[in-house]
Each structure stands twice: as C-alpha cells, then as structure tokens.
Length: 388
Image (cartoon, rainbow, N blue to C red; front, side, top):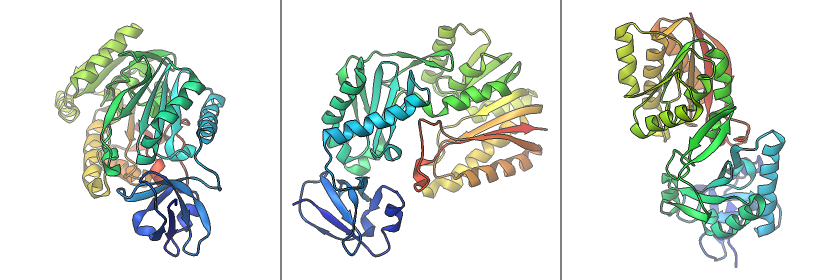
C-alpha cells in the first residue's frame, strides 16, 4: 500500500501556493507502507488531496511534490514534462547551450539537465529521481538523440538524501571537451570535471550585457573561472585581465583565449583578495571591474560571514574603478537575498568613499526560471554600478 502523508493543520498553504517541498516536521502522520523513494500522496490534515511526490525518510524534505492531480509517474509523464521544458527554451531562441530542465521550476524537482551542443549533462539530486535514472536517460535519448549523456551527481546535497556522490557516462560517448557557442564566441566546456554540470550557463545573458560596459576599456575580471566574462568582454574591450586562484581554471581561460584568437586577454593565477590589494598599492585602476565570486555561503548560519566577504571584495573592487567607470558585482548564493546584497553594495560604496549609481540589475538567465512561491529557486544577483 502506497504511503499517504497528512500535514499538520495550516502547513498546506505553501504547497497550495505551488511550492514543491514538504518538510518532515510539517507532517502529522503517515499511513501505508512502501519502499523509500516510492511515489507518495500528500494530503491536508483533514484528508484533502494536495499532490504526489517521491518520499525519502532520510531527508528533511520528506516529499517533493511534482504531480498535482491523480495520475501516476509514468514514462509518458516524464516525456511530457521534459518536452515541455525544452520547448519553452527553444521558443526563447536557445539551441546550442542551455539549461533544459531546472528542477522545481519545470515540475521535475531535483532534476537538472544542461545541454552542451550534442552532449547532455545531468544531475539527480534526490532519491526519487536517482531511482528513475535509467528511465529518465531513455527519455532524453528519445527526445534529443545526443552524442552522449554524462551524469554530474558529484554534489554534496545528495548526502542529505542518503546518496553517494557519483559521476560517469550514462549513454553514448562524451569527449573531454565540448565546444559550445555563447554569444558568438567559442568556449571549451569540461563536462566531466568542470564546475557544476561543466559550465555556468546561468550568467550567459549577463555576460553579453557586460560587453556594453567594457567597450574600449581596461577590464579586470575577478574569480574568472574558465573565462566566461573575460571572453565575452574581450570582444569589445581594450584589454582584459582574468584572475582566478585555480591553475585549472586559468589553463581553461588560456585554452579558450586561443580558441577564439584573442590577443587582448591576459590570465593571472592568484588569490583575488591579495591581488586587488596589490593593485591598490600600485595605484592601478580599471575602466570596469567584474566580481563574480563563488557562493560565499551555503547555509543560513554563514550569512554574516558571507556579507563580510562580499563587502571586503566589493570595497577593494570599487577602489580600483576609474572615475566614471563601472563595477559589475554578482552573487550566486540564494541565502543572500537581493535586498541584503544591495545593502552590502551601499555599505561597500560608503566604506570605499565612492559615490555609485545603479545602472542595471539582472538575475539568472531565462532558461533558469524561478518560482515566485519558492524563494529557494531564485539565487543570482547581478548589479551594474557606475562609480564617480
């Protein structure tokens, strides 16, 4: 007999608004008996149907609802959801490199699928999705006919689901490098070992946006990773310096620089905090400074430390911007709200004794949609400030 969960009184409101997650401490009682990872029904305290999702007794998120009517989790349902998700991206003009499926926002919680040319990179982040890995792979082969499908479930969040971190080929052949086209430039993506699923696709529109603030300028791109921002702005900038602490990342910047034939891009392997202080001591300035650091916090308890880190790096960055130049600052941590990030920028400008104007605010790319009812799905902040 399948599981049926009854929520405590009043706990159904968030679910009725469209949120997917049911926390274990919101459950009044559980009836039935089935395997962990099976499809379970969720009801209000008085038995009204709310939806269905995969249960995991080992996780604080005991069920992730993705079915809102009385149907089963068939292969046909997955095919329909995946096709709908991809069709929505194709209508927006995506074709070469984009996020096909973004979990909760596409009614397939804990499933991430990125397309890199003719290779798909996939993450199964919950027990329920992991148990249906083979079936989902079959769906993707039928829908996309890819050259290869690679699993990048080597993420710590799986440990909270009682799963191990794993990665490897699920289908076909996957080369060490996949060449994608982003905004007219070539980028070599390491699907097997690169960040996340291989590359940060969520900033591609923002990287294109950054070009207009870098025309004929000397640009400093901090936390460059494989060079997404550096490569995009090198199309219009006078000179670009990419800085990252990772030798592997810097090697990728150089690889991508040569792939595009850029001669105005330099790559420096260094601690960003240290080199910004060195540049300040040397009296060096830049027309545009780009700050796109990794998430400084991965939990609520670390928010204060993260804000201190963001403040430090933004103060340093502001001090290096030429009068009338630009600071482009981002955060990819959903624990730091847009309001908190904006306040940090205000405080940073005050500390740096620079007057700033906000020119543009953007978020994650349209192929990374978020649910208004689920703040966890909104994470990326992107601010362009003009510095006086």
